[in-house]
Length: 221
Ligand SMILES: N[C@@H](CCC(=O)N[C@@H](CSCc1ccccc1I)C(=O)NCC(=O)O)C(=O)O
Image (cartoon, rainbow, N blue to C red):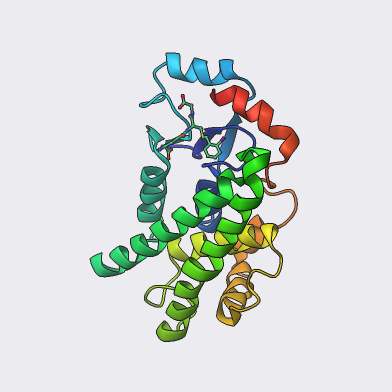
């Protein structure tokens, strides 16, 4: 009988945060093993735990899963967060992949060199407000349901909420022109499992601080 999933990553957001979100949204308790130094990564690499020598790695159902998207897909399928049929899954995948593209910008901003930060910030705000958020505002308008796909909660809803909240950390009024995204945020934040994850003291990680960048870079480079 497999125990709780065990997540191997550093004690911060990075690529593992969406996995934490999805497990939490599914109501699944998980353990975390934090990499504090390069040696912790090397140990996992040397004991054969990392198929491509990289983390995130999640121990789940007797597997040592790597590759963030593969892990997310497995969790979504296991906990019925992937729609009711192939077409809904295709829609979910399109929405999630689009959000992952935006999330990549949000995720790497803190790592930008000083001389590129202002331009990078302008780019991520532009992409969020002119490319990605208009799509999901229209989906919610045209679909007329509480959730993005079908009439059931899915990994796309979890990913959208994570992305909206992260974007607001960068620019608090970023949703000013998107009333349906604002109501989606309020509604989805109140789903019990998500509401619990949003409470202080949960396993949700705070935004990466400038002061922590050097320590994190030392683990992975
Ligand atoms: N395609 C892989 C990429 C994984 C990856 O880049 N892992 C990095 C850590 S996340 C790095 C990262 C990436 C984006 C934002 C913050 C951070 I920290 C790693 O293990 N590097 C060591 C190596 O490659 O030898 C995935 O999606 O899981």
